[in-house]
Length: 153
Image 1 (tube, one colour):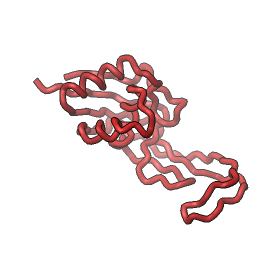
Image 2 (cartoon, helix red, strand yellow):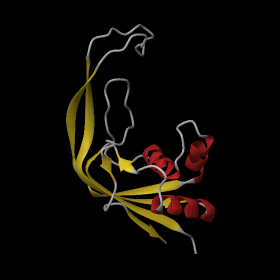
Image 3 (cartoon, one colour):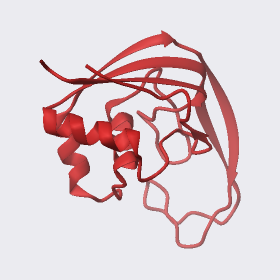
Image 4 (cartoon, one colour):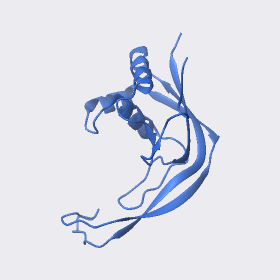
């Protein structure tokens, strides 16, 4: 019998980056594959440059169901300019404080199905049951506790 992992993501705020560029951080209306791979990578304790992340991405297939779509809300954060930072155009950025709009899904709920070979499914399941790093829905303060439901089928 084929094993699948079924996850339930529910949170006051969620953000699934898709087309974010520099200061503006938008959200997709549903979990993205890169976001799911990022959550798996956190549970496994992988650093951002770990080649295993690309391997995981190439070996999993995901399906997403929106149980409650939620509402997109905007938040405005400020970031202090730092010396020696550059814009997307390659120009030196000034040191002024920048306003960075951020989008979040408010009060949304999703069911995510992960399909992969049985070895990877077992590794991911073990990582979610005993995560090395906290597993969270962005923003980082939204750590998944009771609302991460893990099922193996």
